[in-house]
Structures are given as structure tokens and as C-alpha cells.
Length: 245
Image: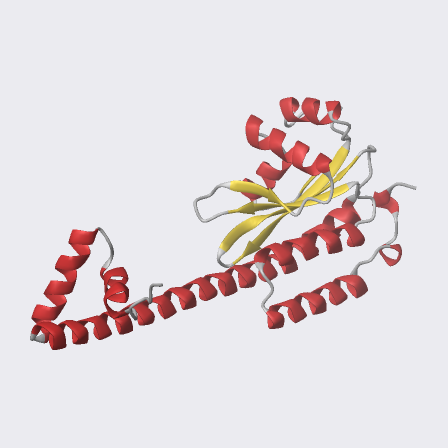
């Protein structure tokens, strides 16, 4: 019996996908990194569609670049690299069209002849991929490869599509947390820079008898002369003297 003929009761659909969603929610609460989230997505996708010989995620960055992450087997990186180099293939189609793609046999599929020929030469025979899309846009795609023809059917395709929808939310939130963390660190650095500059101005005002504006101008002049930022120069001015000997 082919995978397309298997009844939905024999596949990990509603129950397992619900468990996946629950685990994803738990990760959001613990604010896992994007890389950890992608590792989990690959692991769970391999469990949800058990004919997999390799699972991976193609991630789209802010500039539209593509990168394979969290690949579970070398064949995933090899197959994806061929797509990026040839600029054709099922994963790229899923990203551009915003819909899942399934190949039953790369030796007979005619949609991407160069990639299919190269994939067959690498030992791949079938695959499915589904884009990860939220209201913010397309974040990437999950793809599952097999070394046997006809490994995946319509039920597997629907399973992966549903999984990708939930995974997309997870990736979007993980990226938002990562951005927030970076902004938070930058904000803290800004506050620290402001504080040390204020201290340096006070130092110059007291040492040289300057007003506040003149002290700030003096600090900028010192920074230019030393080839450093005002914050770095300020930190040097207020640093405690080192003891020698």
C-alpha cells in the first residue's frame, strides 16, 4: 500500500500535531533561540512524516537570502545546495508560490530537469516541502527527502503543510524574541554610554573649569584626536589610574 493510500488513522495527524503545538508553546515561554527552534522543528517533522531519510529547513533572511539550517542528514545540505546553485527546485518553488510541493520520483519529474537529474545522481528519489508563512511573510520552508520513490503521498503532504503552518508561528516568534534581545542589549549599551559620557563631562568641568557644553565639546575633540568614540574616550577619562610596580 502506498503512503497516499494509508488511512489518516495510521498517520500522526491530529494527536501528534497537537502535541507538537504544545511543545512549541512551551518553547516560546522559555524564549529558545532561533537555532534551537529550528532543531526542534526538524526533529518533530521527521517524527510526523516517518518515511524521511533527511529533514531540513530553508530559512529566508531579511535580505531574501536562503540558507539551509538544522539539516538532519548530509543529503539535505547536498540537495539544497544544488537548488541554490541551479536556481531551480521544489523548495524554491514552494517559497515563491507559497504552496507545498511534492515529487514522487525525481527520475520522471519534468518540472526542474537539472535539479532532478543532479538529485537522482546524489541518491535522492522523492521529497515533499511546505513553506512556513505567517502574516509577516514567508520565513522559509521545511523539506523532507527520501531515497526511495513514492515515499510520500497526499496525506503526508497535508501533514507537512499543517506542521509548517504551526512551525512558521514558532519561527516568527523566535525571531521576534531574538530581535528584542538585540535591541535590549543595544539600549543597555546606549544607557551605559550616556552615563559614562555624563561622568566624563563632570570630570572635565571640575578639572578644567568648563561649562557643560564646553566640556562636551572638549570630549568630542579628545575623541577625534585619539581616533575613538566619545564613549570610549569618556571611559578612559574616568577610569581609575592603574598602579605600576
